[in-house]
Image: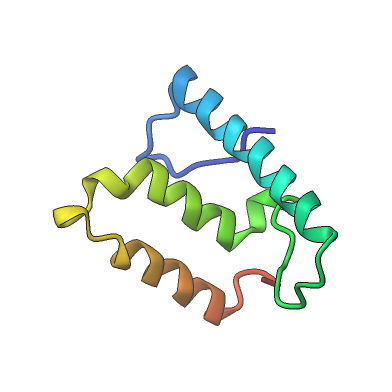
Length: 90
């Protein structure tokens, strides 16, 4: 499933394939982490459109290059604020 993306992001066929691959890899990470007693880990692919962690990782991939001097903290901060505001159960 390729998730919805902000209108400002050009979802080209290549980007759709990359995003689908990211979802496959994140599902693999979720399965791997099920085997380990990591109490703080929250699966991200049950509801990928609601996953702040997956959105943040995707933003780093697709928007990271556009950040000033490669500084990714503004992106991560934006998603931390969403998490604190209770956008999802993460």
